[in-house]
Image (cartoon, rainbow, N blue to C red; front, side, top):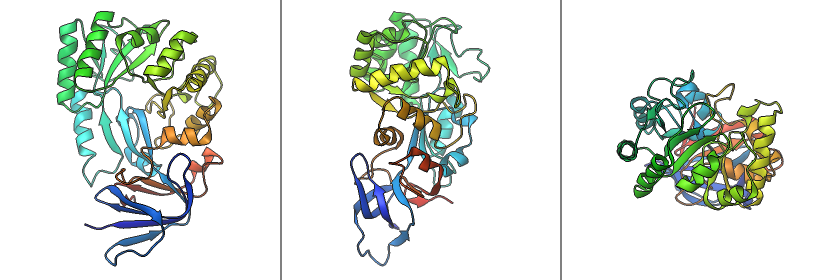
Length: 342
């Protein structure tokens, strides 16, 4: 098996670890060595890069068929999580993404979004038939979670969009969370409307697929969320570069969530409006506006730190983004699973 050694004059390995003269060795899709530049075996391939080395990105909220997988990979995102698409289509695509010949990021998926009869996203213009799965009682909820888990779902998504239609009852929502917990699957919720974040907390939802934007959370709810949830950012969808009341509400909630110690993941909701395939620098800039340091924003963005056993997914950019995340607009090289992307 060919080993690839990447050498760079400067690298960011993860929080607090910006180091010079780095050599990262990849084998079998994983990182097997990290250290200073040194001699390697004659059988190893050596790649000297002129730029700043860092981990590649992961987008934790996409609808991948609405984007461009090739552009996404070339633009620095090597892994994505699809949060609502017809089961037959998305699980097959996720399996295909594991093959060496797939020109795109590694795809993991939730499958369809569980919702109440007639609830969001049923009938939504963006959602093909099968994007939503209507659940009317606790037994159906448990069965749906079991089926999605058997098909390879990495999370269960539930619709709590009270502004677009009915939502699952508290009993059904709790059944979804209980069935997912039995299978060690997180439940991620689209929470939209007054009181929906509190409902998600009460039922055991472990993640919000969007930073809340339809209500300013009270301090008690926000503290509980910071203690028990992860939030996926998806900030730019509220204005696509413009300042809007919805964006301001989301930034306020996220800023307080961050100060309370909440965990934040980068996600764009690719497919929702003019969101680019690949790294979305504007999304990272909004994270900075929410109070994250540059390093914290990068930590939310990357798939994993550069360390032994981590996926061999790497980026080379022209300059360090630790000073300004806009440096991620200048991507020179992408490596996925230890293989340079053409």
